[in-house]
Image 1: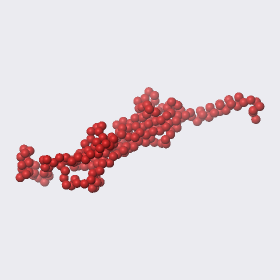
Image 2: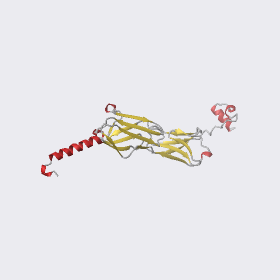
Image 3: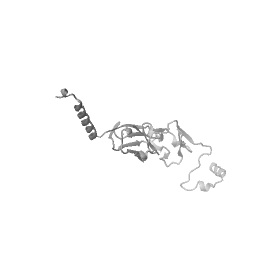
Image 4: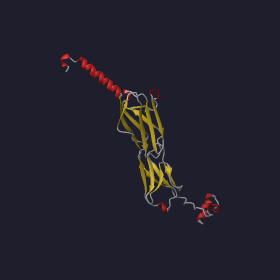
Length: 225
């Protein structure tokens, strides 16, 4: 009788709603969605996990369940990630855990990079553990962003993916290219490397030879062995 009254209130046919093996009863009309809040996670991607079976429900805004009662509510720019469960049932009882994914960035190689003057500076930055690949990766020389310095021999190529890779190349490096280089992306701790641009080995040898020869010629005759 309750179901028939509900059908009448919705002006639908009971035969359509409650016939056949795939029919599902409507939830109680006053039941409200239940919401779980992961608050103030500064821009990081949040994964929701059901502890009972360690089932990953969502990662970021991507859902990993066929149960359409589950939904993640997140507004762009907001720090809140809300897991909403509609039409709560007894089987939904249990502990739900939010896990914050912290993207990591690192530049391949050591903390210092040495190149010869006139050669090409090649740096590669890897960004991983990001729920969503970063849309942009920015490179800085000291405090100046250099992504668009094509006229100065700079090029940047970024390949988004589970491990986003961004490659920086600077042609015909000179002493002015020495300094701190930073790879940065949204919601990711930046990575740093210090680049030293020095003269080539052959040129350093030539300069050393000229300096020693000059100093020898300047010595007093009595000082020579």
